[in-house]
Length: 395
Ligand SMILES: Cc1cc2nc3c(=O)[nH]c(=O)nc-3n(C[C@H](O)[C@H](O)[C@H](O)COP(=O)(O)O)c2cc1C
Image: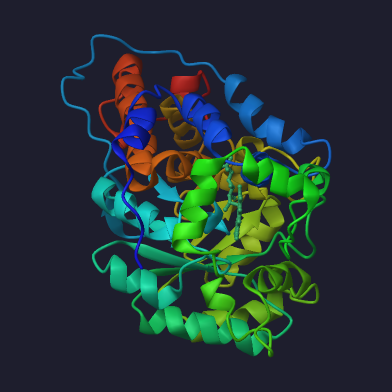
């Protein structure tokens, strides 16, 4: 089984969305509430989730006119390889609940748009299956350090064998965040049918029909993690519960020695941590607060970005995620020191609405807005996006 094609109705639903927010609203209609909230929500009061959006509106453009902006070049260097857009796709787990084997749909859309896709450990498609389905994509793999370290190291070896370009180690999850929407909806991993969620599903017959046709999603990378191979969703829970809270900087050396390709660390917000990552030989840092799903009250990523860029200097590759919903957000992040951004939920919204066609719509909208806003600002290429565009002399 690969990933189903969207029906013409589903494609129309995606094509009719003129912003990421409209795709979000459509995905809220097509998904059971429990699943939409699992994708959309953050932890506790969701203050970091909100801050990730609000931070962008604190910066305003001071455009320059009468520059030649007839040709706009959005291409940029991403970890030593040219990407068509300054975008990579963040790892998001359990995508199969939104679209069967949605990872394949997303990776194909990413390939066609010329940007990398990151497969998470808790994906519903295995490392090997994705590499086989999208051999010509730029594939990155994301790992958490689990208590059973050999299991994580085994996954890393599989990604190396399957030819993944980059490895991302996520470090902002020494324990799971408290996501109250999931608690309220009784949407948990392990997934259990309850009176509440059965009612929720019953009002989304299209989603149920898809589930019946394609089966319950399986966290394929985790098969074998639980010795007696209990239900798929029970395996899912073991990812969070088995994260190793004792994992620390010295342990990262183990991974650097094991992974010959590009190595990134995800989830840093502190400038001192970023300096340490640089010293330890990481090729890049992803400034992230896990999309507001972990530490509620954590600083917005744009603010963290400025401090980290100052701390690590101009050469270190910095990516940022959290709240990027407009082309203008991408420009602001680059002006404040990012090499590129990553996106999580915008892709989940797109894939839930129309599979690959929905993700194509997500990437089209961001590309279109990015190009338009660059032209309106007087920046013909990514190199011309500087702090001055936001009225700053320096980062
Ligand atoms: C449903 C969901 C699942 C996620 N799963 C993972 C994961 O497995 N590993 C990880 O490093 N980050 C995970 N993240 C965080 C994303 O990689 C990313 O940091 C975040 O979504 C960025 O914010 P945005 O959604 O506002 O773009 C997840 C995010 C969401 C929304």
